[in-house]
Structure formats: structure tokens, C-alpha cells
Amino acid sequence: MLAQVQTVSERQSRLQTQVATQQRIFQPEDDPAAVGRYLTLDAERRQITQYITNSDYALDLTQATYSGIQAIKKLSDRAGELATLGAGSISADASTAYAAEVDQLLEQALLQVNSRLRNDYIFAGTAVDTPPFSATRDAAGKITGVSYVGNSTQTSVQISDTASIAPGSTGDTNTKLGDFINHLVQLRDALNSGATANVSAAQSLLEGDEDNIVSAMSENGAVQLRIEVSQSQSKERLANVNTLISGETSVNLPEAITKLSQASLAYDAALQSMSKIMNVSLLDYVR
Image 1 (cartoon, one colour):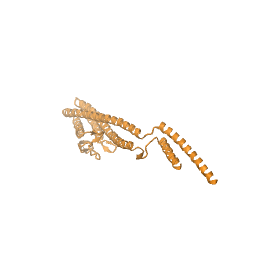
Image 2: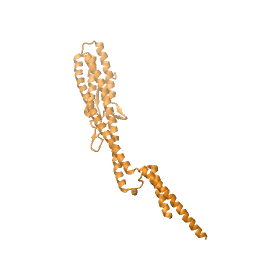
Image 3: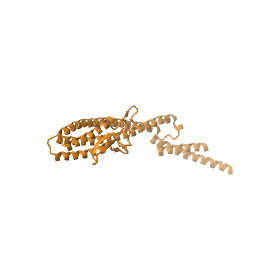
Image 4: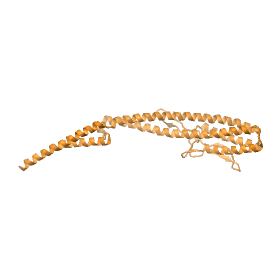
């Protein structure tokens, strides 16, 4: 009788735990087949979660790259306006004033191409620990040229079982950003000299730079879209896997509560029966 009471008590305790935690599996022997399925699903869940984390990083880098190129596009737009003005019939004072403004554009452009995302330089390829653009300056501190000292390698990021992506700017784009800054130097010097032919020559180069910048923005936008689509698919897949995992491990709460109620009644009944048996046995002993 004692063994029966203990068995009922253990069943009641197990059901109480299931109701409290809403989980039905605590040991592999509770349901070996379900545990096997759970382990497979859990491995898939961890892999998908990693893909989503990778996508977050790739998206952050792509968005930061796009913002940087977009800022450079605004500088390019203004440089084009100044080049158009400088190529016309203007006074020497006006030409000098335009050159001074181009100097400011140069400084802003250098800041943009050496910008960071967290601690990594954005336009550096994989050489993210060092400023990718090195500027030379004259005795007055004005930029006379820049050189690209990053590399042309892009980090490959796995964003799904079958797809990886290279976020950020390409080595070609980075080099062309350096060309843009050097063409700004040519425009400034041409404006300072007052030689409209030289201004027109710099203007032509800057128009080519504008095309390159717009192309880089377009390419970056396409990469960003790919990442967002893949990330959305991964999140949907993760939700489905979590549902499957829940189906394998979660308890049917109404059913468990009913079973717990039944187990409690059975336990109380077993205790009462055991108590009666013990009382009868005690009386027999006294007699």
C-alpha cells in the first residue's frame, strides 16, 4: 500500500510541475522521440538566430555606408554648383570665395570617408582599424591630395543557409571616393587661379564622380534590400520553428489540470485507505 501511495504522490508532483512550468518534458526518458525532435529543432533555431544577428550587423553597415555616400553626394552637388559658377564670368573675389567654400567641402568630405560605425572605419574594406584615407596638406594646413590606404576586400556575411552577402562599399567605390576628393582639390586650385578653363576641366571630372556616387548609392540600396528580405524570411522561419518546439515541449494545460485534479483525488483516497488499514492493524495489535 505504501508503494502505491508513493507512486500516486510522484505522479501528482510531476503534474504539479507541468502545470506550474507549462512544460511536459524534463528528462529524456519522458518522451525520447519528442526529445530527439526538440534537439533537431533547437539546433535549427540557434542557426536561424545567428543568421538574424548576422543580418543585423550587415544591415547596420549597409545603412551606415549609404548614409555616408549620401552625405558625399550632397557635397558633390554643391561642388557642381560652384564649378558651374566658377566656369562663368565672375570676379576674382568671387572666385576666391568659391575656392574657400570648396576648402570646406574638402574637409567635410575627408571626415565622411574616414567615418566609423562603432569602432570600425566604414570605407576601409577589411582594414577597419586604420583611417582609410590619408591626406597631405600644405604649410597653411590645406588639403593638397588624399590617398586610399584601405584594401579592396569586403567581409562576407552568411545571412541564410544558402546566401552570403558583402555589405558596405566595394574597393572600387572607395578608390573613386578618393578620386572625388582629389578632383575637389583641382577645382579649388582652379578657382584660386581664376583660370576658367581649368575650372571647366575640374567640373567635367566632378560630373564623372557624381555618376560614380549615384551608382554606389544604387548598388548599396540593392544590397540593403536583399538583407532586409532575407532577414524577414529568417524571422518568419524562426517563429515557425519556435511554434514547432512549443508543440513538442509544452503541456496541454487544460488536460494537465484535469489530470492533476484526478491525481490529487487519488492521492487523498490512497492516504485515507492507508490510514484505515493502519488503524485496523493497530487495533488488532492492541487486542
